[in-house]
Length: 309
Image (cartoon, rainbow, N blue to C red; front, side, top):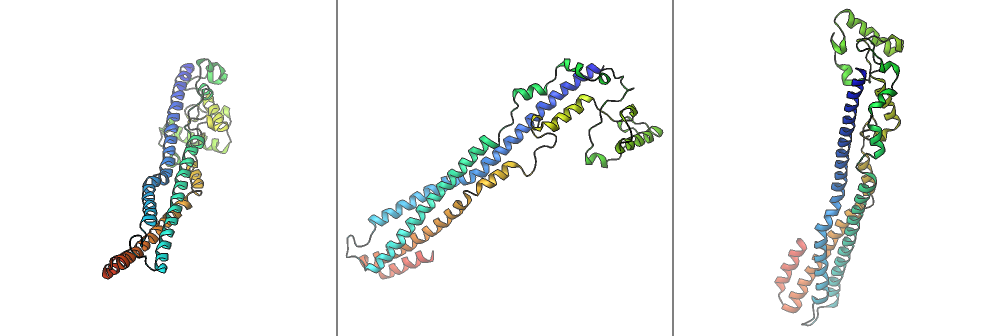
């Protein structure tokens, strides 16, 4: 009977280990997806802003070279041309700086994502040593104590204490038949024995069958080994589970300090670059309409529209 129980328990033990490992691997898979999603925000901006910055710089360079006033007609006054070319040059400088900050932040985020996924947030696939320690051969039954091997069922209690109850279990009221107890005198005796166990006033020999909770000694030894070597447990963190706050969030938070500033100033540089570019166009439309076309009212409308916008 005891040998059959040991065989059944270890089948359940192996199933619990593999199920726990599958759940841990699924959990770490979600952690890895968190890293990809959070870093992907910065990486995705390179696809969005990169082409825009390239087009703007192309337009600025083209206007700076081919769009100067005075190529086909008499040139405008130098002071107004200086303002126009200065605004255009400032726009090119700000857009170029924004592109540099864009590539730096996107590539740094990608490097951090790859490093975290390959170095820190790794799927906890069990090693061969962990698998060998998790399984039990039937001959392991002979390594138990004599008390567990020759225990008379229902007459002799288990050799180890039961696991500690959770806070939710302690709040639930227990009836007379709970945990093998009987109504009336048996329930009262069980309560007294449990109170004595909590105070440490009883010994191993004073266990009462049906009234004293217990578990096999191999289970107690497994819990001790799990506390001593937490990484060999199904979750990889012993009986406590993954600590909070989760480590991958904190690691990514620390890594973001290296590129979030570049990402913010990238948009600021883009704003100032477009402002200077629009001001340069407003000056250019004034020069072109007044000096080359002689359209005074069109120059006023064009400059007013670009400046107001």
